Length: 425
Ligand SMILES: Nc1ncnc2c1ncn2[C@@H]1O[C@H](COP(=O)(O)OP(=O)(O)OP(=O)(O)O)[C@@H](O)[C@H]1O
Ligand SMILES: [Mg+2]
Image 1 (tube, rainbow, N blue to C red):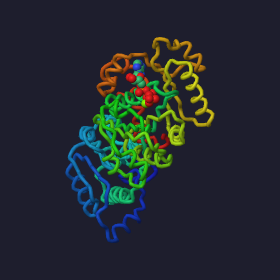
Image 2 (image 1 turned 60 degrees about the vertical axis):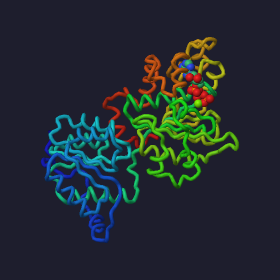
Image 3 (image 1 turned 90 degrees about the vertical axis):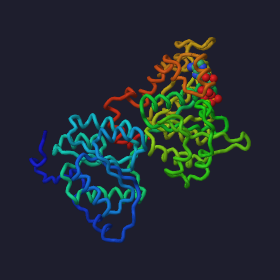
Image 4 (image 1 turned 90 degrees about the horizontal axis):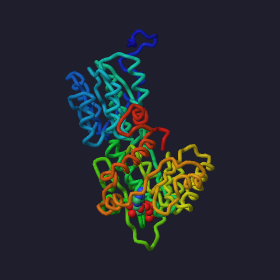
């Protein structure tokens, strides 16, 4: 362990809050009203609790709550409730703080600013935490000016509606052709990431007229998606909370069923803005993109950090998957495209070798043809991964590719989550 006081740089107990708090003083000097943005703190000792409470009340931080406990208490609570805007967690006495932060990352929404406090004056720990995307690490006893800076900035940021810059990952699932199983893949991947991977997932059905995401999950299509696209200025956190339909604890769906006539042609900008808003609240935003190559579909495919092209074992489908992948690659984008060979082994379909030949190389993932469990699941309106273990195992491999790791846990995801995939769409 490195003692920071031994370093040439004169550290105070804060390791990252700038020394100049002039703007904070000005804010406090003026007339302040209550400022929004939920702040939730978990602290292990009464002195820190009192100090935080006093400063929050002086700074008129509107939505402020302190709970007694450490990072493990935070993990337990946040697995069951929405995350705040600013989360302060206490690492005091925690033997493996990085592991504890990993558990926290599993339940914390991407837009949350996480600040750690602790009892260790340890620059290595500080660096590791910062490397994981933790905004600050402060060690006890917390001087009052550091608390003021922390809460003042948090309140100010939330009041101005500033973005923390952390965003979930946008994943587009599209079909090389119609009817190849795109929605089946999207729904089951979303369900797997939510229920096994324990991520917060938004699943958006961009087929506004004939989309079947809601049907696959036994939900009634709502009005929210249409409203969001028609009046993007109304889309805020509250709007999304009302519009999203919960399919499970961590899986929310946005889908509509517009009349066939007249056709709705959503504005691509409005759709991209909506997906951006969702990315601040969900770890992954999965979009079922119709294969109509409309302007909106292309815009979403262009923005996605990862595109999944589903094809079945039909020659035209394999060729179209090849063309789609080629088109994405020639657009110069470094974003990844994966091809899924669905319904592998279906009677009359291409053999895997023939499919791969038509595709110009092996498919990235394959899903066998399993009509019985998939039709049963579709009839019941529940993801097929819940009733078919081999299918679940195939979807789990795709989920690993989406999350870059085994979706059940692992350290690599932590960096991405707290770092928030700043660069990832
Ligand atoms: N691996 C599979 N094995 C057997 N049946 C499958 C498989 N994947 C999908 N299906 C079935 O194929 C049908 C079409 O699937 P799905 O609705 O997912 O296709 P889609 O590509 O989204 O269609 P659309 O283009 O109409 O949106 C469904 O009945 C589904 O249960
Ligand atoms: Mg579909």
